[in-house]
Length: 228
Image (cartoon, rainbow, N blue to C red; front, side, top):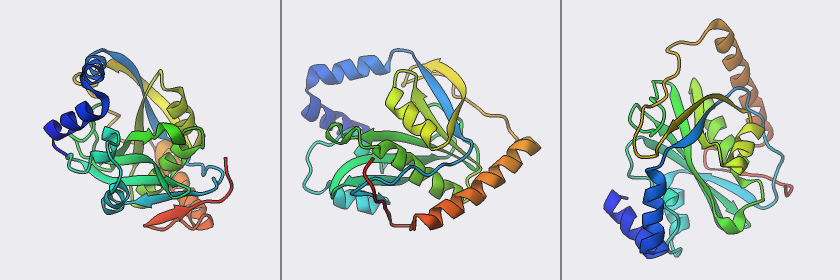
């Protein structure tokens, strides 16, 4: 969705003053944690939760729903290569995107083999069910299985629920930056892994395959059981 269309959607959804406050917040510096997967850990199953991969699935799920948050309309942005939609008891509940390429991320200068999981959003009525950690896990597992060398997430220091969800499935904070959402220097990781990091990555990737088979992860969707 083009920038102007996203702005008009937000005006319709939130009103003029709320939209202006959002723009003002985006222009203020904030402290952000740079997180990276160190060892992927599958979360406990959640009853009635289904994760669907792909933009086509998202478009189908959006039909008949008016004025969803901006995070549900990112498919036309450069570098947004994949998305995962969460359903809880059949209802659209959340979204996360996979970013790839040097200009895709606002905050990280992504190199080849690096991806960022971003634009995570769980609808307010669906929060408290552990949906965020399942979105993080499914997206990270798929990225690693497809050969990603590093999987990042950027999380505001004030966003405790997202930090907890990311850390639960194996993200660890490796750096901290302070900048606005609109401009600022991007984080750049070291250009090459040391031998210890390479060995750790191979161990993690082997573990991903085992956990994925145990939970019957497929390319289209993942169904989990018991409620969190």
